[in-house]
Length: 150
Image 1 (cartoon, one colour):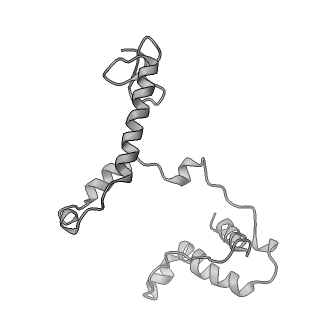
Image 2 (image 1 turned 45 degrees about the vertical axis):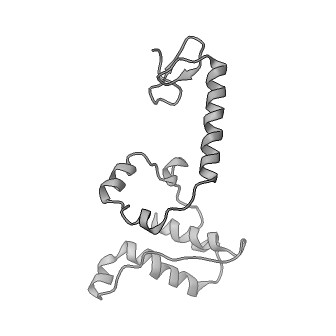
Image 3 (image 1 turned 90 degrees about the horizontal axis):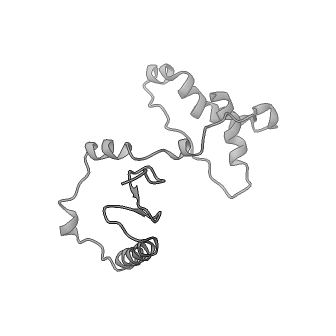
């Protein structure tokens, strides 16, 4: 027993400095065993056969499974530090008035005034998909609308 391991998972450090689980190993023996275990795992995964429909049939996920998993997962947006509001506004973009109106109606209005959509019996749009080759301006269009949304 000793200090918690670097990962904070509660592993112990033995006298030689190797991080170990239940068994004490020398530093070299631990590294060699870990490498051997990794090689076995990699070869096992590479040779796995897909499950048959009969094997898949009894498998299922429940909401409880997702709720349990969410405690162990961090969204990528949180991993990158923090989200910033872009400093690009529509004033920085010339023309494109029609596209601006479409994006405002599809993105900004449902966020700002969802009651208008409900009064008209319209479902709230889930968002928009901007697609095209690299460099065609997708991000340039997304930044001012994100700026307006805050």
